Image 1 (cartoon, rainbow, N blue to C red):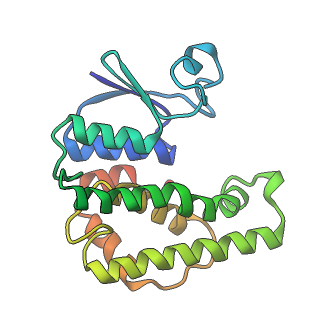
Image 2 (cartoon, rainbow, N blue to C red):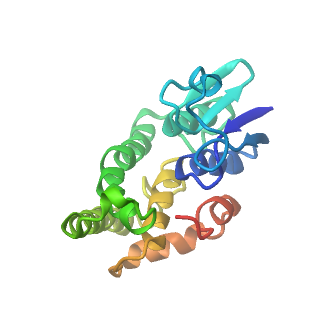
Length: 207
């Protein structure tokens, strides 16, 4: 059975858990990460040299990096309905998956560490305000895209790209800051509420 190493509160672990829910894929999960088993021990570093969750073990195959994992699972377990084989459709998914990791995450990092994690190293008010403004600007990009598609982030149908994007939106909604009104984004989250994986692993009160 697929093994997932990582605590369920981690946003990156939840990408993997939600993907498994969409695929109907059974798994066993072990708690690793802050508050649980330490990831800097030799046993874990042998699996992921970055000492970060999640890591999966699928038989003898070991993989780390959450976006790589969800792509692998969709490709390995008949997930073409999530991750299309058509090069253009797949590229649209990849575009938003990669943007979430490289651009959106960078925007919210400081504000999240300050306002949710209460990190003493992230309490510069000017930097918090700047991060909140950048975060809102990136959320506005998502809102405009959803207004264009009228459905989901990469098009009219739910895809693998919606998993990391929705988790980042949830993080924004659950962080105590001023939230602008984004009608397309609100409607999008309401559409996602019909999906059990979304309810269990995304919009569950965990930022």
